[in-house]
Length: 158
Image 1 (cartoon, helix red, strand yellow):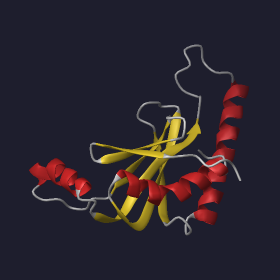
Image 2: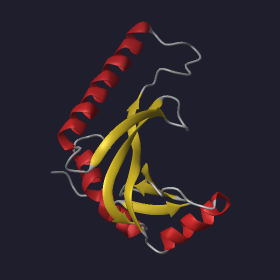
Image 3: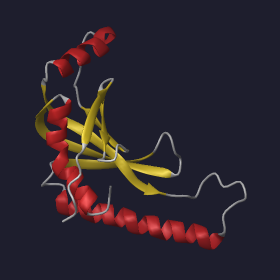
């Protein structure tokens, strides 16, 4: 088993940022706040919910999945390099798929969706839907996510 990482969770405008032990951004956690009314007071209400450490039932953990390194090459990319990147990333995607089939139940993961990262078109992110009772707050979110983050890290996915 690898050394334990001291994960840090930081609340930032309705979401929680996840940092590894070296202070690198490792992902994001999006609580599922549900329907909030009135809509024009949504930010204020969510802020109060977080300060009150209200209980939630679901959330989404967004973490990096694969670095494509296929796009935005001004000089182009050789076919062999493109094939290597695709093969490598296919292997990584299959590893994620296998990991989810073996670990989803243990970590209350009910689904996954892949996205292109906003900041880097060459990066794919995976959103993991988590169904578990938890309270809002940095400490509480860290307690919820640490077992899954540790396993993802130990298995080479983070």
